[in-house]
Amino acid sequence: MSAFVALVALELASAGTAGPLAVGPLTARPGEAVSGYLEVPDAGDPGARIPVTVVNGREPGPVLALVAGTHGYEYTSVLALPRVRERLSPARMKGAVILVHLANPPAFFERRIYRNADGKNLNRVYPGEADGTQTERIAFVLTREVIDRATHLVDMHCGDGNESLRPYTYWQVTGDPALDGAGKEMALAFGLDHVVIDRERPRDPGRSVYTSNTAAVRGKPAITVESGGMGLTDEASVRAQEAGALSLIAHLGIQEFPSVRVDRPLFIDRSEVLTAPATGVWRWAVEKMQSVAEGTLVGRVHDPFGAVLAEVRAPFAGEVLYVVATPPVTEGEPVAFIGRIVEEGAAEAR
Ligand SMILES: [Zn+2]
Image (tube, helix red, strand yellow):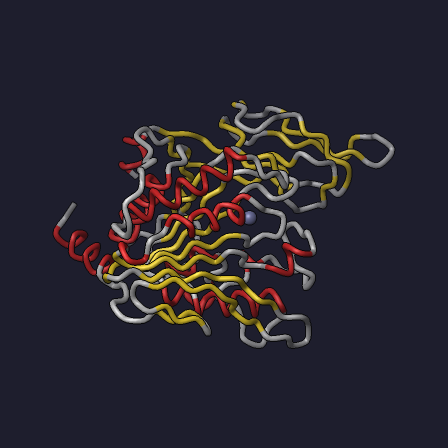
């Protein structure tokens, strides 16, 4: 680590609060935990009440935001955060944790995949708009009240209700060595052994698009994690979210917990979301975690009578990170995510 990187890391680490931490209408004094709601006002369409817990340590340190439930049919993080909350002891903490228990309540209660009733995907509209539609107003409140208050962020996802997914973390590479180094350490601390290297996130703070990227363009190390999918609530997937969050809290020096840090990460340096070439009935031909060669059949889109409309094949050799494993597909929407694994040395050299 260079002196420059060490200095920046120190500044990031000491950026937390020693006094009260206010998140929307909630204020947690040092040594205190408070829960309540962020209000997203009704406008042309209904607003939302976002449940949040603010746990403020007695001593200053990093402020970690854990954001669950951005997509309405993704349940593992929503079930993990109350467990994390229970383990936090503000009297012993150095720094703070902001737990967003349900970032997108309308999508959750309406059981929506991908998009809200306004047709927008919460993880595509950041930093949001104060006078926009429902999804944009939710993003605006989360940017202002959560992301702007935090020093570090984890956006916690799983495969959506139709996605059969193997666990992995997105590590975004911005070109800023301090930010990228801190983000990589967060990714390893979270404990999921597949790490997707993401170099494609926009750099404009006014069009940051994604939750974690909204933190990154504001100079805050951030990762996106994926564990679970298909609308399931299996213990292994929930436990991975819980254990990863606690391990990361320990990594940041906020409170001691067992580490689940990855010793032998598998970095994915090339990845591609494959999309449906036609609207129809999807019959997938691969499973999550399966290795595929270039040209392997991933699945076929059929018309309702059974005739083949289109085929999807792997564009390069790799592993299936997720595959849509329910029949409905719409042209242009994802059907699978393929990644190519490299060794750590190769990832470092880039
Ligand atoms: Zn998601």
